[in-house]
Length: 458
Image (cartoon, rainbow, N blue to C red; front, top):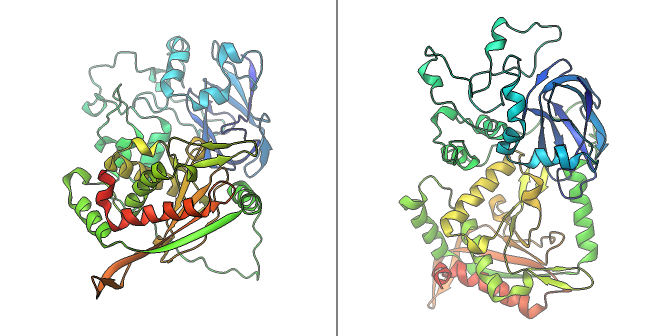
């Protein structure tokens, strides 16, 4: 049996380092394919790294809280006979076995296919069952040092082995869910047994879990922490906070910002939101004015395409698709995940995508790919009671829209003062790309949709 070192992979796009947040295994633990080994924090998100093969942990090479560069060995594992060997990124064995980065980002089904023969040949060994694929054969990942395997460990075999007739009825239809899906369900307080799985192979999907938890509150109350005895607190600048600082400084001092504002009578938007909430089609789906604004941005981009661009010094890239970023405040700091190809989504599909994005961001589980390749961003400062602001453009984009709070105010309608729901829409633009007339037309188009959502039917 060979001892291999597990190198920290690049789980994002060109990320150079990550912090070891928490180990999910300890020396002496038996690990199995697809079992989560460690949780790391990159400059973009928290990421769980799974194991591509079965074996025994011999040593944790990096302590929790340490930040290491990509490619640094972080764990030593003694692999079981015939198992897939770990290889460092870029080595000559990548083609034969695949790097841990490739496996970590692939579907669990691929891991099953790659290791099926290994599992089949090791039915008499503990740890031969894929975590998250059925209840039988579960193996603890946190066994105490020196503990002896239970006598019935040998019976914990792969699901392919016929079950005896005495298996309880509750095991007849095993819950098929990947570890991240199980973790999501646990975080949201969802009982997996109550979730209806819609995956092609009967597996549970993220959407299934979110649908079950859709009635839960999207926002948490934040308790005010008690001040300690010390007069000051010093927080290390790393991870997401370090990335935010670097990106905002770069954007503010590279792209010349210009901002425009307009007040809007959003009464019909509020009426439309109310109708959607009462619609059976939107039952269990969170609906808010942000949904209408998101659809309005996609609509207005088609009429003013240069606001959906990127500057490269040599050329301006105008994107003919909308990857809509939503600025989200999380306990780890501000992140901007985006919904891909918003222009192709129906209003219901967009509502579900926004809810998924919010829940995932709230729980700190947004993945790097979900924050890459954005084309334009919305920041919903109205959710904090703010009327307007001058947001900084997300790096690589040309515009960001701020939606202010929607409040009842006196408004002149047909010569009479009436109480209407009023908001302020503001937007900042990269003046290298967007001229004042285009910026003004874009914001005016957004205002038009908020005043009359029926325009979205055009």
